[in-house]
Image 1 (cartoon, rainbow, N blue to C red):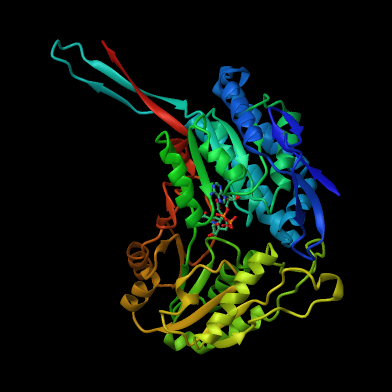
Image 2 (cartoon, protein in one colour):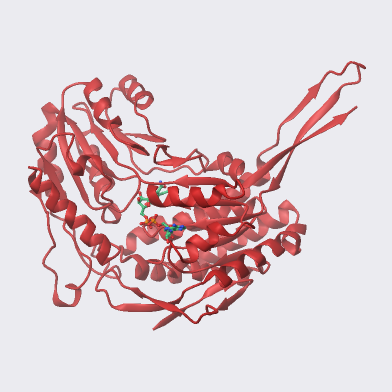
Length: 486
Ligand SMILES: NC(=O)C1=CN([C@@H]2O[C@H](COP(=O)(O)OP(=O)(O)OC[C@H]3O[C@@H](n4cnc5c(N)ncnc54)[C@H](O)[C@@H]3O)[C@@H](O)[C@H]2O)C=CC1
Ligand SMILES: O=C(O)/C=C/C=C(\O)C(=O)O
């Protein structure tokens, strides 16, 4: 069995307490790894190593040298592509093609893109008049914020962790990462990459464990952590924000969503069905940007429901290594229980189950895995639980609509505001809708099309702050102003 250790100051180490926990495979719940659980002493040691590295060799590098090293990290991820694909498949149980086409290449890109941004983005400069007529010149100086605590989730573990580590390191910070307890493997593998390309010790550290009263909480409580970037559930964000209030430390949060997909009758029908299918069911619905409530203009409604049903019923269940499979299990038994409880609640609240609603029949060797059927409902009022609450599973409710105002109201009617996907060929309408829906990210005639230079984050309870492009620089650096009297 795989022994996974913490990565502190450039070394893979056991927890001081010797405590370990099991990592189980989502496909059959067999134990696939034993993971060292960091206690407070281990976390404090990782933070101290990160603090020391700020003023060591890493802190003395020129921007060009740092950029070269981060390009090296990206190249090494690409060289060890198969190892990362295998580790991420083992962690999540998700299909091979999702890893090879999206999650692992994106992890490598997260290092290259932010290295290039830090090299090319200028700082501001203002000339000013002074009473003596000689004037003064102001210029901005970006400095790293310090030690960044990175707390990441399980649903796209490598992509979402590197999305934070890439810009944090590009800006000259050091990091202590606490990956989700459900997905320890790829973050640990990144430690090997850091060592092999010569990232100095202490710059990248990994502590494994859980949230409350474990590594996650210990990391947020350590006052030498200068800022915390977190992706996960909104209620976890609330706990982290309370911890960060001690010492008034900065936070960047990417959290839950309950995203609407909106299809107008003039949309390209096949593209809209494909797009909503992906946004509802990719990664078994475990995508924060995914669609769990779909609104279809009435003339198209029946045809759309039937086309989406057909696609949902055609998914191929299977192990990730099975290249014919395109649909994996949920991450854990606990999450399977949560999703199934919503499947039951939808029926109790009066839904028509168009397809799915339960556990699929699986061959004996996979019967213990966390499988659930892709599920579609119709017929519920907007007050229903499955229309209001984030499920984070492979399911959506489809509702007909008659007017723009009606659908805007329904899209906005919840506490989240992460993303939306709108399908129409009327561009004027698309722009009106984009301005009216209260979310951080709107896709028109597409979904999850990502340019890493753009702002990424959520409105309302879906997030605090923006990352991506220059917005990441705002979070991961302190901007100083230098005023020179001429
Ligand atoms: N807005 C976005 O970009 C994204 C948001 N998400 C959201 O993430 C959630 C699913 O991920 P999960 O891993 O279940 O989220 P989670 O909030 O349960 O856990 C995320 C991380 O926080 C840690 N944690 C939990 N309690 C903590 C505490 N008190 N102090 C410090 N750390 C703590 C966990 O160990 C894990 O590493 C969904 O709500 C989803 O919408 C997921 C991906 C992207
Ligand atoms: O593209 C990003 O930076 C974020 C993507 C988010 C997910 O992949 C997710 O929530 O699954």
